[in-house]
Image 1 (cartoon, rainbow, N blue to C red):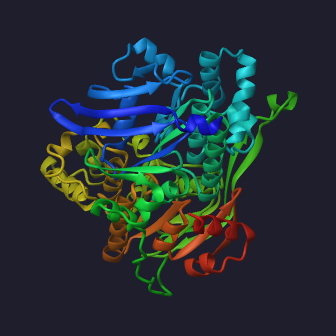
Image 2 (tube, helix red, strand yellow):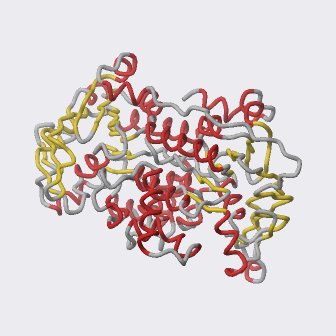
Length: 544
């Protein structure tokens, strides 16, 4: 039965054009997806791959669409519907039921006012007609299937209470709720660590075999394409430049752009840290603990809350010009460690920035805020949609250099943007634009520029390249390496990507369940790991 379905057409896209006013961003592309097929759409940020996927469900606001996107019926392939021209009411019945989508940025795709379980259950109640009780039970099971620990508790949690990787898994659970015929997966594993990424890929493959589901994978992760997809379509600047079966395209790419993508890997180019006995650490922690209050079940919970220890007695130090990498699975406590280091969470133990303790007082801590800046994992949620690029990037100068006039702030802002690869020549009226006018990778570069503009001593980098395509990732890592050499910057690098740690870090911490399991020089920890968990992480990265 599965082999018969595999030969049936599912989606046929011809001459798809997407334009915003006078600017066309997708230029008459063609591609097809068969039932049960896994097709990858690959390209750099701004290549048009996400706009292409969103256009299939008419989710791009103010876009002019042209062409045909025929979705064939499950039983009678000749009963095709053009997704670009059918009435909106009919399309609403297709969204989530026949075609589902996993969005790239889960924090903005999930509703902050509803629990994760309620949002998944809503899909089941709407499309499957389940009762509220049955839908909630199914939501818990879906969360368990995606590898989230304690799924019953996580189902009651709100999006902000989950880690980045857990939010992405909740999005995947929601998309798979109705067992769609076609899944549009826009960077589905961007926020996931290597071990959970393998679990998600195995889950998607299992569901595809079981239900004959086709997958259109939008990604910049070529290792993911190599492991998962049957065919690949390569996009550059809104054009399809190469397509074919994955193995021959990767073995012998015909287009120069495809070759550039395949050859883009993180490269280590960091200077050794000069050992100075009198050099005070930029950041130092001793017995650092972070505890969250949690509800206790039963009558006793009315009077006293329980405790969840997110970070358990961490010790570390970062010297000037040094990078400390923190690696671990989602929920291991690494982002909580970073937030505590930034003075954004209450903590126990000693924590000193440039020799001073956080006072948890705005006036007293203002100087330390300039010493330490942060680049968050999800750029869309960390950049205000109501502020222009000039306001976003120059915000730090208004706080830390209030004597600068408008022209000086504009000049500094343009210089910081140029450092991260965004220029007026590329984006006319750059300073007057808003975050939604940029791709995911470009938004992350805006966030990096905002952090660099006040000349900090230490950058906390929370998954700084997880949303970037391979070529831009390489550029950003190269930029950070150059800035470190020229300015003596220190980095606290939080990531699940072992290859980024290998390229950037001098020292590394391995975390699991809030505890540090192993620490030491990056070469020793990654090349000769001692703890079984570290061995598991390194082995999973090598499989990619």
